[in-house]
Length: 272
Length: 276
Image 1 (cartoon, rainbow over the protein chains, first blue to last red):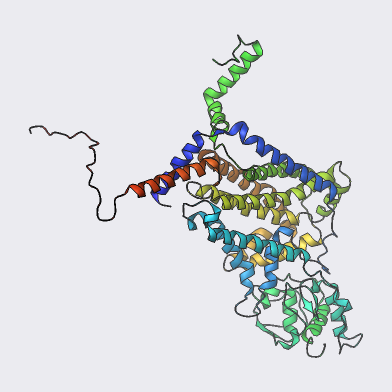
Image 2: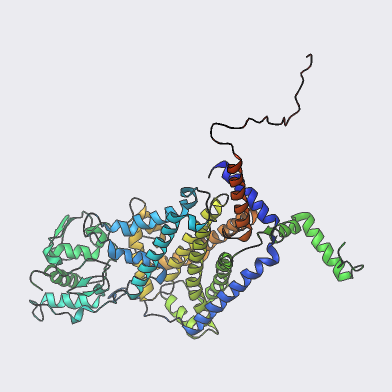
């Protein structure tokens, strides 16, 4: 804003204030009416929609649902858009770049928009940004609210798995550990993580020099590939895929890791 | 004096007046309260301009219900869940206080976003209120972090795993991400200290920050005044008068190239230097 515009505003506001009325009681009574209505709504909701307690934390099997409170749905939903599918949609967009960009733009708003005009009808760009941000956040929140509900993987059948084999045990572990909360497999499951239907065909390989929490016989670094890669990724997702948001599943036994890895490594090739 | 001055005050009135006088002489309380409450605001204000106060009042409600919950809550992984159950099922009105705290959190986030939308659409963040906006933006971010840290305390499956994912996301940020995640988790993994650390951040660190920034925000709001809605009748009248004056000036202006020559009246008396 130019100096002259700033001074014009100050003159105009001084005039408005001179013709105005005192803050107490003229503004404060309105404030209190709205605050009392808000309090009534909060108490009403607390009575009408009793807050319950979910199942207690159980870190071992973790049949979990990693959904945040509704006001983080818009950030959570972005994990479903940016999933490292290609170079244009890196997961870092959802986890770091977009949230920080939004915070930066929020703080910098008055320094970006320096025009004197205050009427929204004369600020088409500002209006479109406001509509875009609110519709965007609202839409993502709605998507998060009505988004895919986790489906148990137990009901999904695969060809090529013989009962009693390591892969069958791996499928049971997969079904009971809440993997489908995030991962889509054969058309059912969440969309936060990558689709695992054909994960065995991707030839995943990682180099990791450190040690993994639970020693699994035959699984050793620094280069992990095939079944070993899946053991590494389950025990320490960020060791195998830097930047991964997946929680570490560090409470299985060595045998369970092996079974789960056998199942995952065969997805799309042996088990379809 | 005003018409309320109807004679000598009784002993209670005299003592009261003396106390007010004593405090005012030392703290300037009367001056400050008069400055805060009796300042003029534009005569036309919108109902949308009450959202900020409603958000602040909700913060007060969250503080009070939070204090009550803190009397019963145990920030320890082995007892947190049962203390939540105790509050919900056994403590008198416990379910109501917990419900109010939870719904209050949602209400506060909605109010803060609506308040931001109002300020944006009214153009109230423009000169001279830029810093008011900056303090408000920081408040909004802190309110979001309140939601994030409060969520874990319930210590049920959803709370735990959602926070595990949130911490993994924090750790995935470049360069400082892992350090921030380690500070929040009190280690490189979730451990028994994580819960009490989140509890401390939720009820001491961020509320302290929010209270400080509400103070700054309020000071700036009081000092700079509440904006007049851009469609206020007075503002429209002033704008119309300005435009009419501009039109009149354009009408009276002589055609291009044939500008009237007028001698500007001397505003300062001509100085005559000594000796001339």
